[in-house]
Image 1 (cartoon, rainbow, N blue to C red):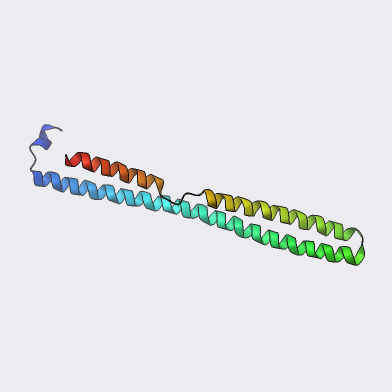
Image 2 (cartoon, rainbow, N blue to C red; image 1 turned 120 degrees about the vertical axis):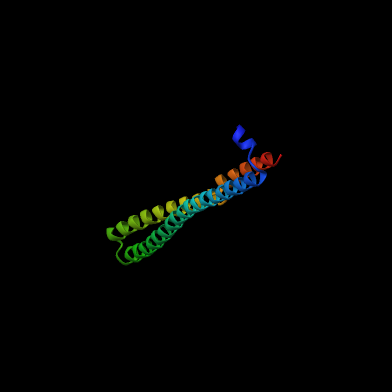
Length: 130
């Protein structure tokens, strides 16, 4: 603490503490907002992967049904082609669904940086009050 701060009235020190605390809380809220927006963006991507995976899986199922129909109707190579395409679409759909589910399951919703800085702020405030 320098000599200038030692001669300041206590009211000025409390006013400065209030101002700095307000600024700190505003910064904490901004960090919270940024962190939550980042998590929401990731969640949107993962939900989109689930949606695309589901559509591809459904498309693959329909193609497999078409392959079965062609296979029974003709007993020639067109059904084999449709069967391969349908199987490939199902495989891609399953992979996308599994990835989206895994990413959502691993996502931590809590704003970790904000929680950490709030703990540090509380610790700092306690030391300032002593």
